[in-house]
Amino acid sequence: MKDSSSVAQLASALRSELNRYSEGEKLPSSRTLMAHYQVSPVTISRAIALLTAEGLVTSRPGAGVFKATARQVARTVGDVSWQEVALSADPPHAAIGAGSRGADATGVLATLTTPPTEVIDLSGGYPHAVLQPEKALAAALARAGRRPGTWSRPPVEGLAELRQWFARDIGGPGGSLDASDILITGGGQSALTTALRALASPGSPVLVESPTYPGTLAIARAAGLRPVPVPVDADGVRTDLLAEAFEATKARVFVCQPLFHNPTGTVLAPRRRAAVLDIARAAGAFVVEDDYARRLAHADAPPPPPPLAADDPDGVVVHVRSLTKATSPSLRIGALSARGPALERLRAVQVIDSFFVPRPLQETALELVGSPAWTSHLRALAGALRDRRAALLTALSGELPALLPHQPPRGGYLLWLPLPDGADESAVTANALRRGVAVTAGRPYFTAEAPAPYLRLSYATAPGIAQLEEGVHRLRRAIVGDSGLSVEGKGEGEGEAVGE
Image (cartoon, rainbow, N blue to C red; front, side, top):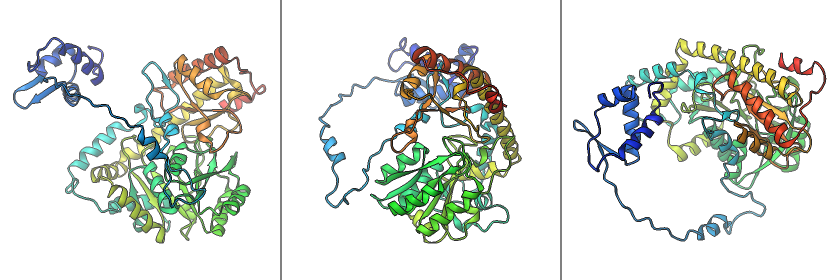
C-alpha cells in the first residue's frame, strides 16, 4: 500500500485481514495500521467507517475497533409477482391516450454508471475530479460550516443572497430579474423535474428537441407526459417545425437547450431566438430553457449569447441554471427563474417534493461563487476543455476520420459522432466496452426511432489527454476489428479543419 492511500484498497485489505480475527477481537490501533499500510489517518478513518457501515467491525470510542459478531438473519423470499399487475394498471379515471407513467432511467444511468478502472470513460456525464475545484470546494465548505445558522432551516425558496446571485448570473448585471424571481433547487435535474411536473398535466404532450438529453425524456415519461420531438439542425431547433408541433399537439411546454445543446453541441442561431419566444407566446406555452452548459464555454469560444430568459419580460421562459456541471456532481445546487403564477406553482411542487434544499449546500455554494477561486477555476476549466476538445478531434482525425463532426462545438464537453449507414450502435458500444473504452449510443437521445446511428463521446470524464487518445485508439479497434465499418476520411483537409 506504499504507493496508494486509496480508501477502497485499504478497506479491501482489512476485509481480508478480518478472517484472522475472532468475533469481538480488537483490531490494531490506527497508529499501527498507518505504519503498516503507509496511509494517512484520514484514509484509516474512512476505511474503518466503510467496514462499520458494512457491519464487519464495531467502533467503541476510547476502546478501539473490534470485529463484529456475525448475525444470522433469515431472509424470507416472498412472491412479488403481483407487483407487475399493480404497477402497470391504469386508474379507472385515466384519460384515453394519456401518457404511460413509468420510471425508465436507462438513458440517465448510462452516463452515471462508473466503468471499471481499466476502462477509459468517454461516456460519463460529469467532469473528472482533475477538472473539479476540489481545494476551493473544501475551503468553501469549511467557511460555510463556520457561518452562524448553517445547520438551521433555510427559507423554502432558498437563501436570499444565493437567489440574488443567480438573478444576476441569469439576467445579467443590468437585467430585470431579481431574487423574487428565483427558486433554489437541488441541481439541474431536480429543477427540470419540478418544471415539468408544475407546468404540464399528466397525459399531455410536451415538445422536446430531437435528439435531446435523455434525462428530460425520463422526467417527462415518469410524470405521465408524452414527449413530442422537434428536430434540431446545425442552427438549433427547427422553428418552422416547432410552430407546426405546437399547432398539431396544442402543447403548453417546450423544453430546449439553446446553448451547447446536449448531445449535438449546437447553439441556437440568433434569427431563431426571437422566433422561439414568439411561437411559444402565440401558442400560450412555456419555454423551459435548460442552460446546463453556461459555465462550460471553452477558452477559444466567442462570448455566448444571453439566455432566452434575459430577453423575456412576459414570463414565457422558465430558466434552469445549475452549478453542478462546472464544480462537482455532489454540489447539487441549481436555480429556476420564472415570473407570475408559474413561480408559485413551481414553488409549491418543490416544497411538496423536498421541503427545501439543504442549507449547508447553499452556504457552500455562496462561499464558492463569492471567492476569487471561482473566477480562477472557470478560467482553468475553459482552457482545459478547449485542450481536451482539440486533442480528441486530432485523435479522431487520425484514427476515425469518417466520424468527425462537421461543426465541433466550442462549449460543453461532448462530441456527437455520426456512424456510417447501417451501423449497429449498440454493437459498437458493446464492442468498445470489451476493448476497454466506454462510449454512449445515440438511441436513448431520440423520442421515436433514430434517423441514423450515432455515438456520443464525452471528453471531460477521462483523467487526461493521454487517456482520450488511447480511448479513440481502442474505439477504432472496436469498430474496425469487430464490425468492419469504414472509417476513411470525408475528404482531404476536412479533418484538419475540424481538428484545428
